[in-house]
Image (cartoon, rainbow, N blue to C red):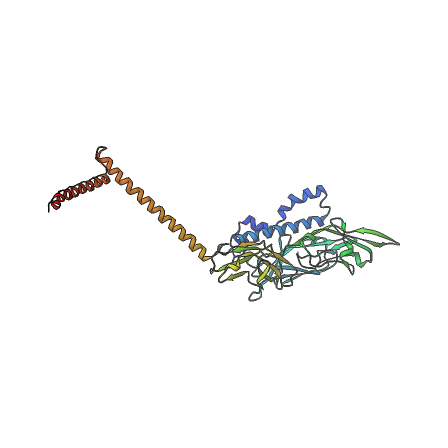
Length: 415
């Protein structure tokens, strides 16, 4: 039976997952005093980031403990912008796994239950300041969704950035807007204080194709706006935009020894961790390499078995994980695998057996000598060793045979 991860943790951890607001004063006071957060924008930005970080940590913890984790609901917003002007409207959509029958969707605002709806959408009409904050949803058959932060602005110039998580390989877009549709001139975009307008701006928007994690940073824009009969240059508030890792760098795992015998199977696994916040339609493809040459793939299975390896299969093995569009590609470190020859192993074992046999024979000889020496010592030093008695007996027999030959010699001469 599938059990929601939050229910398997202590109550305190469940509260962290659902409502992280009691942590924020620990951070917001410090940042407000140091000037890192100068408005409610920064507060909400930190709140959303911290909530996502804690939720992700708990999900990975559940997976590491081998707990069955239900699919997490995916919360999106249309239009997909984190910042809107007051008076504008947005629609939230909660996507979860399909379930039988019509069941309500729960909506949360800043960790508190907002209401239940019969559909998977929730509309915010003519947004006001009180609707600032963090939103989550809970659809039937799923765990709590990702967080989306909505900022309702009363400024004259805003930078609109994605409300949803942006993953590496995706298109990162943002735009500079003036209040009440006012025209803008000389629009500039900045990341961490550096002007990045020229390489990425098209049709008045900032577009970064195939974004990477290093594109994360603090963004803002500036523009000239008409103020009465003159142009006034204004700047938007600074917003932090994070480009998330879609999946971790893979590691090649060898099920058996890295020095298998020829003729034995070789089982390879390409291990990676897919982000729990990724789109539900994400599919990963796997490739396996030997000496930088493709052995198998691309395929959706993360495992590859070689039924019987030979000496020519010795080499450096690695694997690659990529998205279906190849917008994100990552390789594992190479692993050396050496195939051992069966005959060489047999000869080495035979030599070892012969050496043991020689040592056994030598040891047996030493034992026999030791036993005979011990027996002689028990009879006394005056007695002769057993092998000397045998020699003396043979000498006596020889003397008697010689005397008999001498006695027969005169008789032969007389005849």
